[in-house]
Image (cartoon, rainbow, N blue to C red):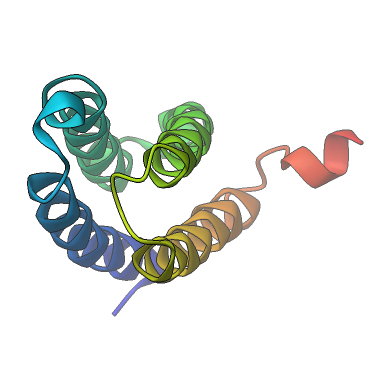
Length: 121
């Protein structure tokens, strides 16, 4: 399976885990932070699928946007933990999977010859 397909598959699996966790949020957080996390998860899945089918010249821009959305999702999940919407142990497995997806997106960008964040420093 190509790298593009693997990252989409891995993020899909992660999104199911995240959506199940959001369903367990306390009511006062489910409809604010929870909905925002759900929407961002849907956006990320759409971005990855768009990148998969985009012409080569457009992929890097889509993947850069994907990286930004992944970073925001990381912070939202941290907020959920800090607000005690999810247990810390649940947070760790989600964050590990999120980091793995981030590495795959970075590798995909690098394979395109895109300017990775590490190259800019």
